[in-house]
Every structure is written in C-alpha cells, then in structure tokens.
Amino acid sequence: LRCAGTLFAATTGLRRNELRQIRRGDVDLERSAWRARSEWTKNRRAVMLPLMPWTIEQLGEYLTHCPRPASASLFDAIPSNRTLRSDLRSAGIEAVTPDGKVDLHALARYTLARWLATERVPLTVAQRLMRHRSPELTANVYTQFYFGDLQKAIERLRRES
Image 1 (cartoon, rainbow, N blue to C red):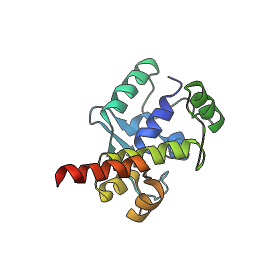
Image 2: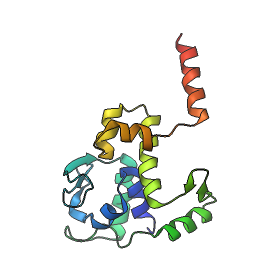
Image 3: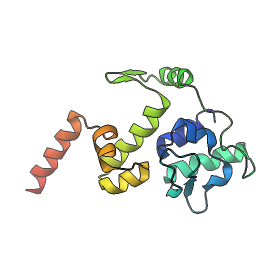
C-alpha cells in the first residue's frame, strides 16, 4: 500500500504536484478513467483519461484497504525522492542511471512514454495521454529508445520482407 501513489504515477504519468492534488472523486473505477482537473495541471486543461487494467486492479485493492470520501486526497502521502530511491534499492534496482538520478517525475513521465512507444501507440495519442502541448516534447524528450529497441525494429523488418 505504501507504493500506491508511485504505481499510480507510473501508469498515468502524473507529475508530483498533480499526484498531491488528485482526489478520490477524480478517479472513476467504473469507467476505468481518471480526471486531470484544469486548476492543477501544468497545461491548464481538464481531461478524462483511461486507466490501465492493472492500475484499476491495484487501485481497487488500495481503496478497499484505505477507503476515502470523494473530496479526500486519493493518497495519504506521496513518497519523497529519498523514499523512492530507498524502495528501488530494496527491490534491487539501481537508483542512479547513466542519464542521472531516478526521481518520481522521471519514473512517472518516462515510464509512461516508454510503455506507449513500446506498444507502438501513435505519437499523437501518446502526446494526449501524457498531456503535452506538442508531439515534439513527447517524442524528443520523454520517449527514449535503447539499442535493443532498434535491434527489434530491424528484426521485424527482416521478418516482414
């Protein structure tokens, strides 16, 4: 249960400030969606976005153990970056990457972008899910590819030709 906020952030791309402000009423498990309210989003646009099935399952379990009214914060606490790094070390995950230290922002934003790219979600759809103003930000900053990704792309071309 301690990781509920981190898991939600990683599968929605919520920024730390947004994660602090999301309320129980912003999540609709029946519709498998969550609402980003205009007053707390960086781009000042309200939007309803879908939730991953895995997120719905985990969030349902969390809310069973930690029920709350619609106006209450969705999460009791948002882990500090120090806590996040400690959790990663406990899980055997290196908390410092070649690109820098891992923090909640990087975990949430880069993880979602990578999952979307790996699943070949069209760039404009990924842009909307990440709530970016331009596809360039999504493609050039948050979507990172590694040698293995490039290798798999070439292998697919070989099979299809």
